[in-house]
Length: 181
Image 1 (tube, rainbow, N blue to C red):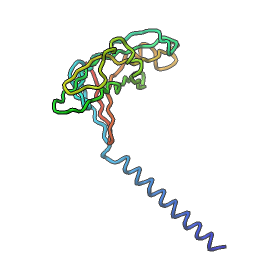
Image 2: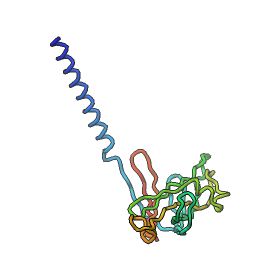
Image 3: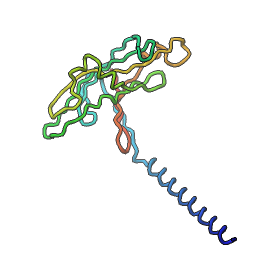
Image 4: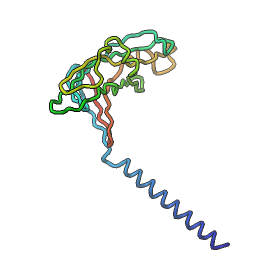
């Protein structure tokens, strides 16, 4: 009986040791110096190679409107863009990934609503997959609800101050493109 308890505790300690070692190795791998976020500052209305396509992102047009989905007033940021597949030797189609746009305002990030963006009239004829040497253009929509009571961070005045980013994630980090005038 005593031998069973000793064997049980030895095996238990061995398994705990293996688990702790595996967790430490995984932590070191995930937090290795190879994980990197690069930031690049870009100008509005200038061509920028982001991902596999070349984009031209315009300055957002901001409108205060009533939103049925929120049941209240929101600020709508309409972000105009052009995308071009400049590859000439490739037969591979490239997906337009402009939905990676993010607005940072009021201490929070707000992402593109891809479904609402596709419903915009300006996007009716847009090509979401581009062949080599093909172009397309449209607008992406980001809606942010307004705090009318002024209790939170999202008052209309605060939300009018924003920063626009395009964030492209990959295995070992991310590329962050910051747009400004």
